[in-house]
Length: 335
Image 1 (tube, rainbow, N blue to C red):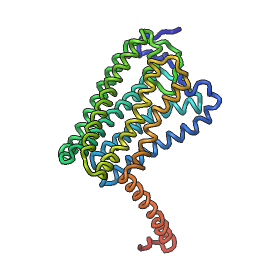
Image 2 (image 1 turned 180 degrees about the vertical axis):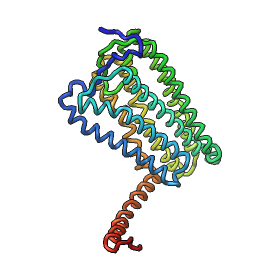
Image 3 (image 1 turned 45 degrees about the horizontal axis):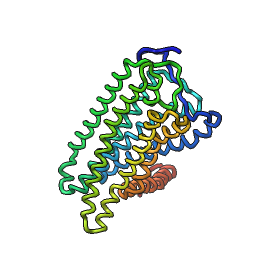
Image 4 (image 1 turned 30 degrees about the vertical axis):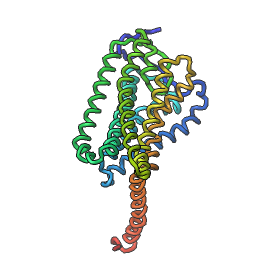
């Protein structure tokens, strides 16, 4: 077996795997996978477009939602080429450099999503527990500072990951468990002790996402205490309803991520098909469901979407009428 001692080797390759044992039906599996990718791309693009165009949505809550949509779009795009390449063209081979870049994107955008969910939890905490200070605290400047802190945090993470992998040796020609590059999956084939590298990665993940999750839980404990002190049942219901979307986003993000991480690091006997399904759920479930949840449960988003669709629909007949007037009389007909 060939051993490569650093990340600069150009001949080090890995082999991606979509659904082990189901290679003959990859074309059929690609149909629902393509549908999910399409929903994720269109849904998040629509959310982002509506927030940019609609002036009434230029508020802190929707700024954070737009950040979530951007992160989901980037996470979806980062895995789309290799996933469809394996399913459509059986293009399994990937160089180490390309694999490292994709792995960096996958983990950076995952941790970015975790950070954005923390920012959204802080937004809900301020709106429910300190409504009088909400407008003065969550100003445009403060939102920019939060975004800057999130960005700096990811730069520190990617720099640490690069330093950790730069001196790591890998065995060439190994088959990965997923149609994309994932750190716990790659590190199993390192020449150094994989347990040390794996648990270092797990410690970093727990440090980043674990602290985020603890902050979110603490925020909702304070929110729950504030809501339960409210006497009016209608106000309680309204307060809880504003948190439903965010709680759903937190659940569909953290549960698959934690499950996949535990499966790779602690449950070595798990079927590769199960690992592959968990990986695809981890990557596709949040980008697919987040825009659906926020579109259905957030009245302002839903109304803004309907208004945009109605305005587009009303412009269609006008355009056709204008064109008809131009064709028949040589000038645009007056309306």
